[in-house]
Image 1 (tube, helix red, strand yellow):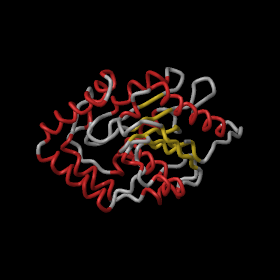
Image 2 (image 1 turned 30 degrees about the vertical axis):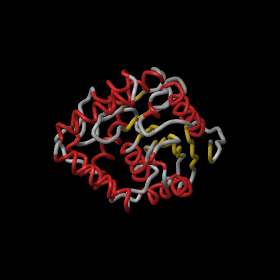
Image 3 (image 1 turned 30 degrees about the horizontal axis):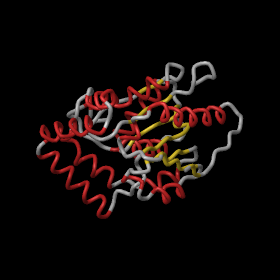
Amino acid sequence: METNESGLPLVFVHGTRVSGTMWRPLIDAIGPRHPTAAPDLPGHGSRRGEPFSIPGAVEAVTDAVDELGGRALLVGLSLGGYVTIATAAAHPERVLGAVAMGCTALPHGLFGTVYRGAARLAAGHPRGADRLSAFAFRRALPRRHARAMVSGGLSCEIAPSVVESVRAMQPLASLRAYPGPVWLLNGERDHFRRDERRFLRACRDGRLVVRPGCGHLTSLTDTTELARHVLDAAAVVAARTHGTSTATPKETP
């Protein structure tokens, strides 16, 4: 169990086709005080070749939480954000709080159809899609962050099952079910923020933070600022866990 001396445990959940290594720059910026884990989800990284499912992803996250003592703050980006929300709803006793980044778009309608088509194309040519993804990471991110994205391996062949699994989710219902604090953290230019107001309204204890100038991936590049957001959330959760009250705004520009 977490203590004031050791810091609140943090579990980081990665996005589609990458692995837990994507979080290394942020984990380094946070420092050693907080115990951390960044598990690979099924079909990704060290678990490449396994089938992906939301229940399987939730199990991977809860296993990581248990390894850190049984309760933690979750931080997820993109697919990792959706998995974070699902885990919080399924296991509120293990999830002390959730920072859900770049995942406030409902995976339905035209938006979902576009991603389904892109996923099928990637899976049909996985080696080329992996190379294209690596090139895109190098173009969009500083060298250290791009290296973290690819160092655990890429697995574009898993994209269709990821998209179908996310399309079957009900993230608003999951947010309504989770009683703990939620931070919806979006980049101003992130195309996954399109339904952020609906997600915020669904939260029982939520707040929305929009980071100016950031996109879906470039939200990772300012590790000092991103670490501040995560540590602020950890401080709120730790204060509540240890019996003190910390107020936070519903929305932060």
